[in-house]
Every structure is written in structure tokens, then in C-alpha cells.
Image (cartoon, rainbow over all chains, first blue to last red; front, side, top):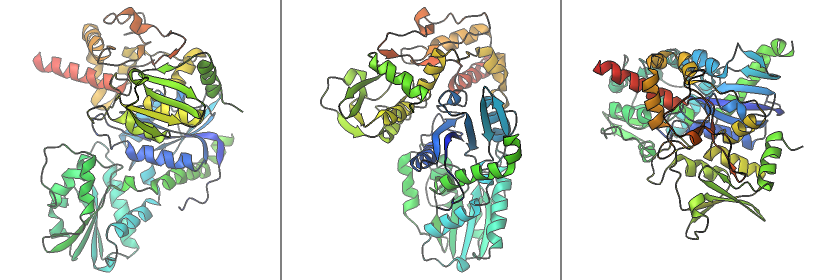
Amino acid sequence: MFCLSMTAKPHSALIIVGHGSTVNADSSAPTFDHAAEIARRRVFGEVYCAFWKEEPSLRQVLHMVEADDIYVVPNFISEGYFTRTVIPRELELTGPVTRRDRRTIKYCEPVGNHPRMTELLLRRAAEVAPGVPPERTSLFIVGHGTDLNENSAVAAKREVHNIAARGVYAEVLNAYMEEDPLIAKWDEHAAQSNVVVVPFFISDGLHSYEDIPVLLGIAGESGGAASATDKEIFRHNPYQLRGRSLYYASSIGTEPLFADVILEQVVAFDAAHAAAVSA
Amino acid sequence: MMSYLSQAFTEWMVGGGREIGEIHIEPVESGFVLSHRDDVSRTDVIAFSGAEAARDLAHFGEDGRFRPLKTAPNLRRGWKLHLADFGELRRALDYFYPAMLGVWLSQRRGRLVAVSLRDTLARQTGMYAVTKKITDAQAQTMIGSFCRTEGGCLKRILWPLAPGVPVTSLPPEKFQAEAPADTLPLLCHEACNLLVAQARQVVKKAEASA
């Protein structure tokens, strides 16, 4: 746990906003997990989730809250359409600080924007390939590519830059499912004998269970019926393939330390908006 | 100090409140026991404890399929859930019927503002912007099928199609917020994203066949 700067807020509520899904049960799972972990720590008086595609919805969640001081943290990998348009519209936010009906709603940055993301990616990469020397390893951070969430590729590139700057891995590479550099050509892009692949997604689902494994060559196509059993794909590392040892991680958003980054975004909000809140 | 939601809910329980949606709540010496309302007298059920168990019970139906709409009348059967205190009970009910306690209390306090379907559709952007094109007749038919209590959704609808234009494709009891004293009503003050997504399909289908 590294969120040591967070002081308890027993009179405040935290709402963690996820996208959710009407077809994939695992889409909302990390958001619920992070909320349960933060609730367990009793940092906030109340902790809730809210979703665009699931319940409680963004239009319902404020009825659950009793506190007048409310922090909203989007559990999204980057800024984009949802964090800039959908969430503010549905919660009727007017800016970083919204005052309405005696309430103050504080709209924090999305989780993926926090500098700590770099540490989480490094941690996940090390965990998935224990004992494998990073100086002889190519690390891929895989994003979607042509995506509604237009900034996810920007965030992925930033993380690759930050990880590379630490000089731990022999090479750190961006790759995408649907645009160059394609993850399907991982063996052409990677120069090292060990290859670690971390999906840069907020939750596991069809992309991490099936689409990327198929592109990597470690799974066959099942016809799109991804389910909880597909977690099996993460349990057979390393895959010996194309002359390399390939280690495949689950989506970065399932990392339990995301709970700490959510709290870090609250701390960052307080630091950035102290004047506006006390005004 | 007891929160106002805790207080209102405790008063409802003391007043004989026992049912919410398909859930029966039984106060016991050691807290509360929840079950499917049709399983109250059954003994051949699997016992769970703690609010977190409610997450999976609510998330997956009898057939193991994901339940994106928690107020759909397909809560799985064959279980009972022991909860140690009121805090656990509230968290469990928030998994089974997200936000429904809070919405109920807002309604009781006169703080629930119903939003017409037209207003909900009017603010949609992106892939849902097209839903504005749905006709009143198409919307009535869609609501009559998608929101029906039998096989659709257990919530009572509080919103009109448009200001002054009621939904007429479902029976009158579907629009009543009041419930018997032992029942906490599931209230819908605004069309959900599932209905908005359905409206998109209706418009797209009509455009394709035009």
C-alpha cells in the first residue's frame, strides 16, 4: 500500500465511476473490488460505485449518498468522451467543484492519469514473470487502438515513455489490437528472448480473455463467449512460442493497488483545488 | 448517530417491512436473514453470510448468466443470506437492488424528480444521440414490452413519455409509487441506460426498413 498521504474523511462520500457492461459480468468487477477494499479501510464515511451501463447508474447514485461532501473518481484508463462528456452530463457537474442542494461534488481526475500508474505497470510486469531478468525482457503495453476513448493510446504511450525512462527493461513497447504497431506481430517488434505483455485496460473481458491471446497466438478463437473461466489464460505462463518465452498478464485495472491510486486521485484533487473548495 | 437513511429504513422494518423486489427480509436474533420471497419456507437452500456474498447472488441468474438489470424478475433461488447488522443489510440490498433504498427515501422526502423519457433522450450524445428520433408510438410499444413487470422489470415507472404525455402501454399499477406497508417499492424516476439502448435499436431498425 502506498497511499500514505490520505487522511480519513469520515464525513465525506466517495463514488467510483466505471463504464460497466450489459453483457460482460467482469467489466464492473474491478470497480466493485476497489470500492470494497476502500470501504474496508474506513477512509471514507460512505463508498459507492456508479456505472454508465450498469446499476447503480450515474442518475441514481446521488440518492444513495448521505454526506454533503462527495468525491467522484472515474475508474477510467484515460481522459476522453466518458470523463469529459458523459459523467459530467449525467451527474450534472459544472466543473471540478459543483455546489448544489447544500452538497459539494468534487470531480477528480481519472485513475489512469495518475503518475502512480507507472509503478503499477512495473509491478504487474514483475509479478507475471517472476525471476525473469528485465534487462533481457521486452515489455509490451497493449492498448485498444482505434477506440471511442480517443486518449487511451496517448495514456499508453505516456506510460511506455515513463517505464522506458527508468531503464529497467531492455525495451518497452506500445502495441495495439487494431493499428500499428500490431500486437499480432509481437515477435517482429520484440528483440529479447523474454516477452511480457500487459493489457492497458480497466477490466478483463473479451479483449484480454480472447482477442489479445488470439493475436498473440496463445489461444484459439472461441466465437466470442468469454466468461470467468477464461482467467485460465493467465495461468499458463510462460508460453513457449516463436522462439521466445511469453508472459501474459491480466488487465492492469484488476491490480488491487488501483484502490490506492483512486485514493491518490482524491489527495491530488484536494491539493489542486484547495482554494476553490474553501472559497 | 444513526443516518437518516438508516433511521427511515429501521422505521420501515419496525413497522412490519419485509419485502423488497423478490427479496424477503427476516429479522433474527443475530441480525437478518435474506432469501428469495418464494423460498421463505424452504430448508434445502445454500447458506451464505456477509454482504459481499450478495454481489454474486445478484450478479448471476439461475442459469449462470449475467444479470445487467438487477430489478429484472429473475433473481436466482435456493439460497439464504445471513447478515450480522443493519450496515451489512444495507450493503447487501445495495447489491441486490442498487440505489433503491436511497431512491425510495428521496421519494418519501419529496426530493425525487422524475425525468420524462423525452428529456432523457434529448441529452444523449454519441451513439445514443439517434434515440431522439423515436416516435411516441414506437416509444409506447417499446416501454410496454421492455419495462413490463412480467419478464421485464419490477420497478414502478414515475416518468412520463413527455411532460403531460403519460405512458399508456402498461397497466395503471405499474405507475403507482405506493406499496403495501410490508413492501419497499422499487422506483424508476428516469429511464435506464438499457431502455435508452433499446430505443437506439428501435430507431435503427425503423431506419433500416424505411
